[in-house]
Amino acid sequence: MDRLQSLQVFVAVADAESFVGGARAIGLSAPSATRGVGELEATLGTRLFTRTTRQVRLTEAGRAYLEEVRDVLARLQAAGNAASGAAGTPVGTLRITCPQEFGRLHIAPLITEFLDGYEGVGAEIIMVDRVVNLVEEGFDVAVRIGTLPSSDLTAVKVGEVRRVICGAPNYFTAYGLPDTPADLLHHRLIATAPEPWRFGADEACIVKIKPRLIVSSVAASLDIARSGWGLSRALSYQIAGDVRDGGLQTVLDQHEPAPIPIHLVHVEGRRAAAKVRSFLDFAILRLRQAAIPG
Picture 1: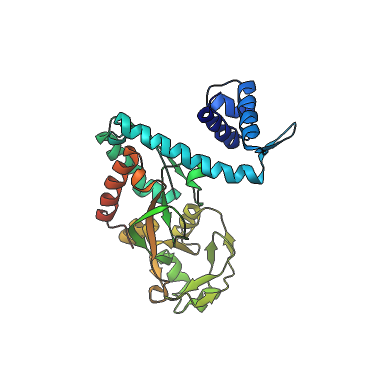
Picture 2: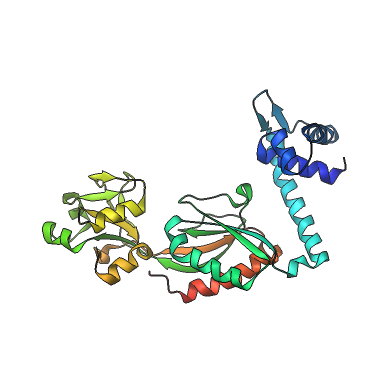
């Protein structure tokens, strides 16, 4: 087995945490994968995996080596694409991850329009309310709502949203309007986690809320707020239609935290595949034109 194939086998086994699964992913037999990794370990003079009857795990040396190998293989792929002309032609499957409600409202309609213009591209959208590791989980682009930590990823700001407190008009008729953040302690609150709510541009005002109801779904909490049962906290784009139609109204607007940025994030920078560059050019323009309710 040549060195390049051994590196591909190593990455596949690391991703699958299995010699059988890694071999299957790249069309080899399990003995061939085992032999390829063994040859690589012999060349390097170190163990890349610890093996038991149930698990295959990277060693510390293996974890460090994996990052380097991924970069090498990505560079080789980019060079191959450039040489074959594929770098200039959007083809393949575009994998995108984004928050659930933002994906439903803004990314799903956008991606169908994009695919209509690029027949050689397919797409997979994974909508999850957690920060996904683009490299480890194999995504091309992520939508991130919030302040970004320092990293090697490339990010482009496409908008911003506000964090708001909202309720139905019939709730306020029954229970009155809160005048200050501290007044929330005397209201029925629906929260997605038992954590303090912060207010003010510098978020210096902290209210240790006592929610009557905790649900893990923002969509569910907003449905309950729409029914008039209590107050919920949301991002402004999530309730823009409700506010426009009068089903929900916001309170304590003058005490809101600073706006939250929205970014499109990707890995490869200028070396990104044509499908990624084309989507970013398309999505950045559309999202900025969309005037996401902030």
